[in-house]
Image 1 (spheres, rainbow, N blue to C red):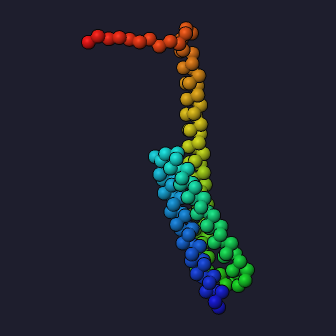
Image 2: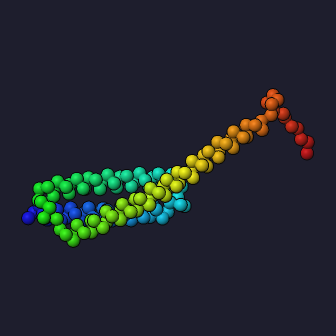
Image 3: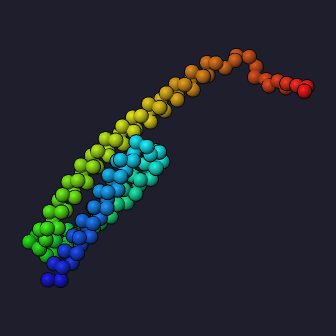
Amino acid sequence: MKQEQSLYELMKVCNEHYRHMLRFMEELYADMPKTTTFAVRESLRSLGQMQNRAKQLDGELRRLVQQTGLESLPEDLLAIRRELLADVARVNSLLVDRIEGKIVVLDNELRQNRLGRAAMTGYRSAGPRRGQVVHVNF
């Protein structure tokens, strides 16, 4: 009975973690078009930490289910978990698409900057590079 209670509590913790992660991902998705590359990188780092924590919680849950058996899983929390995981997968797919789009834009800008820099080298004078002191009397 104690393990079943632990299983119930752990499932509640897991579901809450996935709910938090889902909110974070939805906010990141909504904010990404107006967010700097640095901020996106930091957000993705935070998301990675959340995913690692989810993996850890899932491992604990798996071990507890192996000890108690599948019939011990609370159906109400299991249904919530399925829905949360489906939502996380859906938003994750949207995030990947948006991130890939941002990468394409950044790659294009970088390529244009490189071409512009190469074009500017053609405007350099061929003569010796000497500075000239200009004296102005006021």
